[in-house]
Amino acid sequence: MQLTASAPTTERRSAGPRDADGMAVASFILGLLGLLVLNLFLGPIAIALAGVALWRGTTRKGRAYLGLGLGIADLVVLVTFMQLDNSVSWSL
Image (cartoon, rainbow, N blue to C red; front, side, top):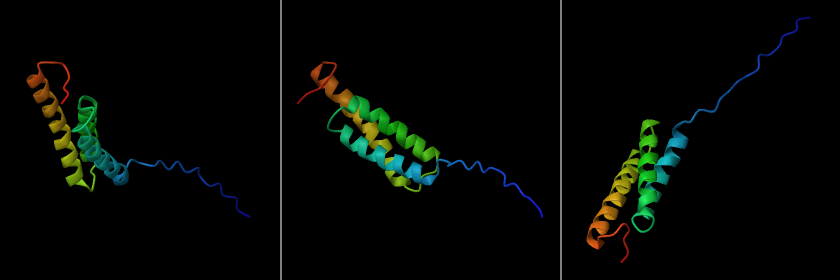
């Protein structure tokens, strides 16, 4: 009779492409929303999420690049309207 002990498995769920794909989509949505509201907060978040998604190797590179571009556009829109209004925030 032979007794064998199974070694405990320490499977760690790595942050794979699925998580990176979710970040790419989230950056796109937040960048798009940031053009309308809260662009001071949503723009940098979209940029950060897109950067992390690209760094982790997302399969949705187009969405990540769109999120990155929209995040940058959020900040450009904010600065443009701040210059036109001569204020710290903007309103139409």
